Image (cartoon, rainbow, N blue to C red; front, top):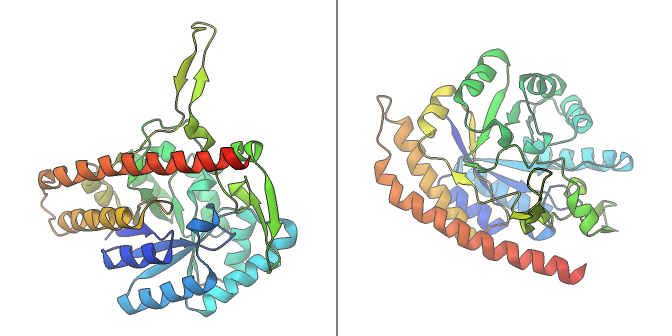
Length: 321
């Protein structure tokens, strides 16, 4: 049975999506995940979410998907040790060295190789499995190719996680490999634990300023006229593909959006909870037509609220740059 994984950008969001039917929620540890501080949780908030999830019989996954510096590795492992002592046993990670270290020191935990690992083929997936990953999150470039998912499940002993949203322009943006924000703005400070926070580098636990979404002038030798193009657009919400995803053996279906409004993410979670339940309890096939009006309305809300958020964040970044 595929599990529904929803975002917890705030403590309130984490609790709302769990109540709305998510099987698991993922949260970012302050300074250790690829989001600014307003989209991350303190350790105490993570512990409280974990306690609430245990009462519901659900899972909490902690995103530690930055690239720690050499001096931060002991601090990183101490952070994992603290979380496992609270009963947390599932982490989303990026750095191959850290994945291997966590697997060595904490052999009982689940490790999700983050989308920011940018796996491009089955050999990449084998590599992350060999160094300790138990699940691999497929990057957007994989699209919705069901044959690829089936092949992974047949050939590699690893769990597979896929996004419920897919970008319209696949292959242009490579999550985890972008350094654009570092050129746009860069500053850092060291917190009380000794962790460096690099604002302008999401790879180091700081802010991504969504520079790619500002629009770019594109011209070429064959067509010198400049065209204004976005590198990243609003995604396509999956619906019709879901029965095939589930038949292919997907382990987790993930909703992105830690940075979005709590109410929107609650409603999207509740929508997908009902869709997945309908599919998974109807082995002989199911019609998804009745979900279309709500699906269309949620897509409209996403575009409006995402546009408002991106304009606000880009404006703030420009002012402070």
